[in-house]
Every structure is written in C-alpha cells, then in structure tokens.
Amino acid sequence: MWGRVRKSWEGFLHSLRAKPDTGQDRHPHNLFEAAAVYVSACAEDDQDQIDEAAGWVSPEALSFGVNELACRAVIALARERDESPQTVARSLLGLPAA
Image (tube, rainbow, N blue to C red; front, side):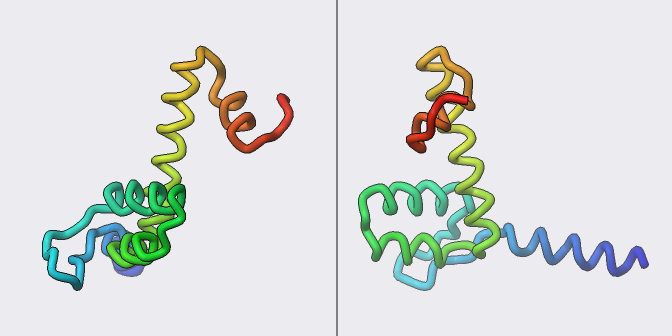
C-alpha cells in the first residue's frame, strides 16, 4: 500500500518539475516562470507566447503557477488599495461587492 502512495506522490512531484524547452534556449523553465510568461502573454493576446509557455511545464504545474500568481497579485493589490483580497478580486472580475 505504501508503495502505491509513494509512487503516486513521485508522479505528482514529477509533474511539477520543469521540462527543458525544445527550442534553442536550453535552460529549464520553472512553473512560476511559465506562469508569469503565460499570464502576461494572455493579457497581451500573444498566442505564440501562450503556446510556448504552456509547453514549458505540465498543464497541472502551469495551473498551479497561474493560481499562485493570481493569489499573489490579489494580495499585492489589496495591500496597495488598503482593501480586502475578496473586495479586490470581485472588483477585478467586475462583480458587485459582497
């Protein structure tokens, strides 16, 4: 039983590890670098850069990185605006105040 748990955990950790880029730039990209490039490319509507960043890490790792970036951005804006993170998040999404 513990062998299956260990193997499952190793698979999860493997999915978070950076994969080397297949292009000329051979340095491995981490999930936070991929998330930063992916989100900024989405904001600029740069499909080529979106596709490139999405290929740097697994989809699960990219999702985790994007989530972490969103959390950090909301916290930073909340501190800057002296508002709660919930208020800032709802405002960014155009939702009415709770």
